[in-house]
Image (cartoon, rainbow, N blue to C red):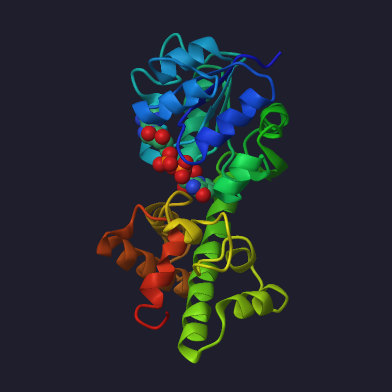
Length: 303
Ligand code: NAD
């Protein structure tokens, strides 16, 4: 049996993901440095332990959902980490769903194999609504048997689990996806800014975009223009969701991965999008959802 399952990182994504494991009938033991996020998980019926090490000691399969590479290396390799003495061992499976450098995915896999444990990188796409509804897409890198075993757990939190190749390849797929996402969100913001300026009804523009060649996830599922959709960050002052600073991180990872692999691969559109989110963050909105780029792009031109 899979129970108990372990979980580290109960934030905007990890919180609802771990709750879906509870809903599937599993016992879940978890850890988060944020007391507020840990308490919310206890209120949902989960159990909270004192460290990642304690989680790995109690659960053979552990999912992690952390902000970035540095947190992942700490949670896996730290003195109270998943891979410290007494933690994950032969027969353990560690599944990192955070978005970070492909190199971190490879490093974690190497650390795990020293203890005889299996590890996969399994970053996600879909955002907080998909995390809540268990409809995420997972992009998985690692040995194929570990992928097969991880799929059994990931299916409880998502609807699509894609095998991308060796360790780090899940992260490679995720960076390419978020490069496109960062650009399409900026494009939809500009479209709505122009519509506002031209006096076009924003709902009309959204209806047209969503049945025309401009259609994309940023327009039809996560529209950034307030009033167009319910249950998206734009409908609640750009709170919750996917922080601008996390998008900035992903665009930084994508552009630096491009530069490292080939200095000739400039990713000019990605570079422009990175500058836009960087300005949004510098103006104090880094913790807001990335679709909050809209008021920055449309400043003074709507409503
Ligand atoms: P978040 O900041 O809401 O959650 C991260 C959680 O990790 C927080 O609860 C934080 O307290 C916890 N944490 C940080 N350091 C820790 C440590 N050392 N030990 C234990 N817990 C620690 O972030 P999020 O939005 O849930 O995103 C998590 C990851 O998923 C990121 O890599 C992000 O890029 C990726 N992602 C997010 C979305 C989204 O829509 N939010 C979508 C796809 C992918």
